[in-house]
Amino acid sequence: MLIVWLMMWAAFDMAAAFVLPVDSTQCVVGVASSWDSSDVMLSYHEKRGGAWQQVGDPWPARLGKSGLVWGLGLHPLDAGVITKREGDWRSPVGVFRIGGVWGYASSIRKHPKLFYHKVNSRDLWVEDPASANYNQHMTLDHEPATAWEKKQQMKQEDPAHALKLFIAHNAPPRVIPNAGSSIFFHIWRSDGSKPTAGCTSMPDVKLRWLIAMLDPTRKPVYVLLPMAEYEKLRGPWNLPCTPVAKKR
Image (cartoon, rainbow, N blue to C red; front, side, top):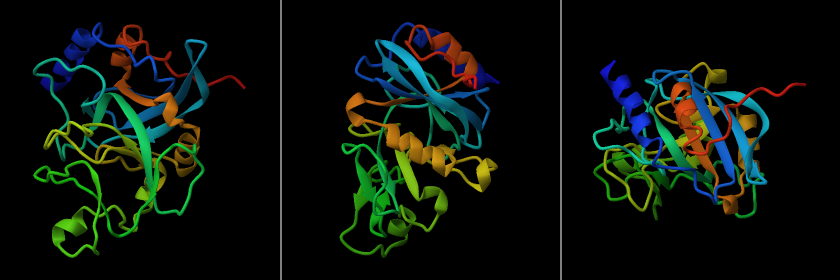
């Protein structure tokens, strides 16, 4: 209960200190029922004529097994607030740049300027906090040989990770050791019946749709918050209205 109370208190202090970047005109919103939830509703919004407009209906997704915790992104953090740690099974909360796609297919439907990299056996994403390449992509000049190299491999014949969109939590150029790594949107497991280790997972068709919508020149962001915090911060942070299902 102490952790949840501290997280809620932090939202009050940060409310007046931040707004979404004015150059961000695409926004993915994730609203969870509470800090302990591993379920979330996602929605996609575009800024038109200076106002946020929801595009399409919200859709269900999954979060970390242990719920949510403040992450390291564009938003401010008060001194002493509890933040994500490597291996805590929590999804990072806040506002994050998104972009950069990795997948097993030779090509995907996307904006011409959106980075896409076809993953092979030599591609690593480093989750070792002791490494200088922590939370970064790297490509070996040889096939993985050591246990360390094999553990960091991106391609593991895992359908859930066949397509991944990067969420810039604890991202370069300022990466903090042990503050959490490898946070992506990716395909969910068992039709959504399983949570993640900290990523946001969703149906394959929705992930492909979302990737196709993103234009990197519009500086897309991901806003993930529990419902109570979203309502408190929506006005001060200039967030889109709470997502709703559209009438048919």
